[in-house]
Structure formats: C-alpha cells, structure tokens
Length: 110
Length: 115
Image (cartoon, rainbow over all chains, first blue to last red; front, side):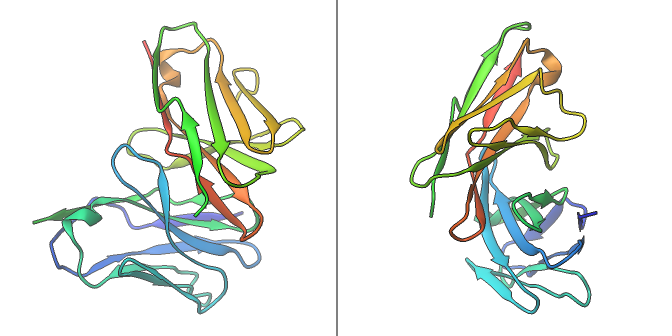
C-alpha cells in the first residue's frame, strides 16, 4: 500500500538556521509528491510539489527533490524565519486520493 | 490559485444535535471532494470521498450513517455530523480536486466542539 513517513518533531531552530525535514514514502507506481504547510488554526496550504523522478519543487525558499532511488522527498530551506513556524506535511497521491505523513512541527525562535 | 471555502469555520453544539458543514469550490468545478478529520497535533485522516451525483465512498472505520455526505453540485459538498457526541469534536477539513492540474485544494477547516 501507499504510506508516508516523516521525521518526528517537534523541530526547534534558531532564525537563519538550515532546515531539513526528512520524508520517505512507499507507493505502487509513480506518485506525485507534495509538501503542505499548516499554520496554527488554519487549513493546509500547498508549499511545493514534484510529479516525477528528479523533479525539484521550490517555493518561498523551500525546496525538495523527488528521489525515486531512495523513495525520498526531503524538505530543505537554507535560512528559516520565525514566520516559518508551522506544521509541515509530506504527502503523496497516486491519483486523486492523498496519503499524508504524520506532520512535523517546526518552531523557529528569534 | 483555486479557492475552497468552508462554513462555518467553527461551531459549538450540544451533544445529540446534528451539525452541517459546507465545502465550496469558489472558482472551479470539482467532481470530487474529500473530507478529512484531524485530531490535535495529528495528521489528516481521510474520512470519505465525495463524488458529485453519487454516493460517497467511506474509508474503513468511518460510520456512514453518522457522517452524512452530500455532493449535490459541482461546487458544493456537505458533511453532516448526526447526533454529535464529545468524541466527534475535531477539526474537519475538506478538499476539492481540480482535474486541470491534478491538484487538490484545501479548505480552511471547521473546528467542531461538542459539549
């Protein structure tokens, strides 16, 4: 079946630190991969996506590369800001249905 | 990007009453919408897939008689929590599938508190 595993949080960083949130997946076929962000009290917002192997998704300084050989889609940002504090969800979709990871809570301290 | 709205954004009700939550795609037609449930500090759990003009498909363990889903038009799906109890208190999020770019757009969520 399809599943997504993320590194457990919470992750606490100082402002301007480098961020990596690991995500690995198990899937049949060739799914599309996504990172969603959820700010406190809000719904999910698409952060970035990649639809095929070796694609790199990027947005707002975040990026992730679809690695088929390691079944990974790690999220990175070179310099985090306090405003990046949120919960980040890795997800995949083989079609229309989404499978979400458990989420990783990020707190960025000034 | 496409916009999905939910109404209400939060609701408090007494145990035993029913609550209806609306999910609308504002600028596109969605033949398929999804309903998720999110417990505090946890991930989203897919409850059901709602297809316009047909019965919803429920995930294993979700009571279809308790969580009634109606997808009467291409822009509106409703979730009714019947005879709500405190354990139904949760954050309910809908999403609408846009076939144009194979993407789902999420609503802002509805926080339900059952007293």
